[in-house]
Image (cartoon, rainbow, N blue to C red):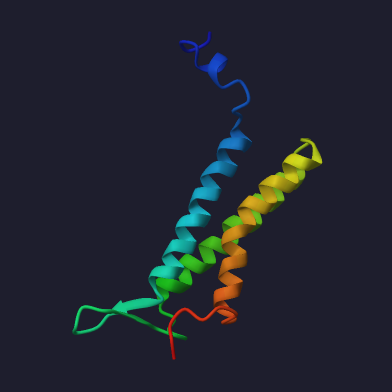
Amino acid sequence: MKFGGFNDLFPNITIPMSTITLLGTAEVLGFIGYLSGMFEMNEDGDRVLRVGYWDVERVSYTAAMWICWGLIIFMVMRTRDDSNLKLGVCTLVSMPVVVFVILFFDLIQLSPK
């Protein structure tokens, strides 16, 4: 029995697609958590960049981002969809990881020296 017409509206939603979507959301939240650990407020109320500061929260967010990224890539490569869809999903999912690598190796300067 179909529930309402839900299956007619979204016929391609499957458990792996939903899992990939949830993992992608968790990956983006992990990246945002990594970014939130880069700045702190000083006494004047201004945000100050903290370089090289790693606490448990920032490490946890970063680990969650990398784990979710790896699981998504693994799940996408196991699907039988066409290669263009796989390439698109992998590109979209890899954006936070690429920005993380750029920020981690200081390839972009975030604050003036």
